[in-house]
Image (cartoon, rainbow, N blue to C red):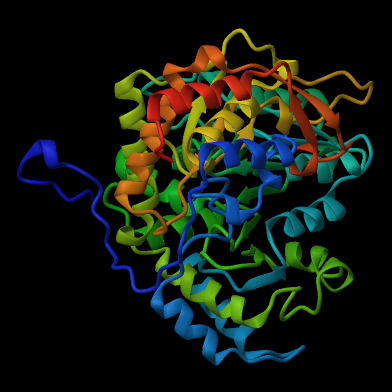
Length: 482
């Protein structure tokens, strides 16, 4: 739980760790930041790390590892088959989730590929609270269709609903009956719903989804990549979970879901991914795809040192001091911006602070990519790299028409144990400046648009010269300061 300060005005998140290794950062002058974002095609993914001051594009694979994780990498058993390192990873998964059946994969989207290859056939449907980009791409590639059944309250940008990632259970039951169970590949719960602001799902809702799946004989799947954040929110927001220890929550979920998969880049703060199940029949169905796509069954495309670090990281995910750091720092940043009037997604979720760009630049239409434009503006203002989570992150419909996002968000991820409080305050300061100068921000248009996952490597250009005008205003306000 948060540590209370004696004087309320001093209240800030308290780091439950000390820094022992540092990496030098660079803050370019504003003119060079403008040049860098334009050379990157206004796509923050294409920026070079040397040009970035605060990298807030993701918390995937960029979290700081603990001293015990770094130490564990030194005992890795580097063998192709029968590795003791994998046995230690299985033991850690048993300790956390209480299950024995484990398949490795090189990361979360590789696990999604294996799930899709196993269960999705042309004309089938996959039901989700909300889609994720790579998950949807794997399913549609195989001729399947994704149906989103998020409770409508989840799309309200600012509310006091503590679990905006919840399934609409009535719609779930109705859609299963309408489409018929044999046409449902699986039902997937994303615990910590990425594209609506990292919003959590309640334990009660998850268990109800499992009950409905079991009733109709449909596989239930949990994407647990953000589960440690979700468990934190369960503990502090859900009365049922207040007196449950974290291990009990993990193991209850593992006993009820048929399949759980996760990226160890998020859950475990390392690299790689895993698929687990309490019943061996599920892992047996997927097993053949691991050596086909990933590697042998005891490494699955992962480097063994990463497996050791992931195993230790999983054990540490039972510690509330460990899992609270992300949500508490994110909540601090959200409050800083909300108090100033900047439109943000509330309540604060996991992953990061999400700017509601539809309200920041309401005059920029979806097909001029407002969230990407705000992302470019934030980089110009502060050397801060966020991630567009709006229409740019969608994929076009089969007929080529644009699919507009439900929410136009810029995610400012908060990698765990990476940034100091002064850096978080710097981020808030530069976003406030962007908010005050939002009228200068214009739209973007494609110059190179890939057909699949375009947000990763597509390129755009500004419409007009609004970025140069933004730089001129920055120089007026800040003078020679960076």
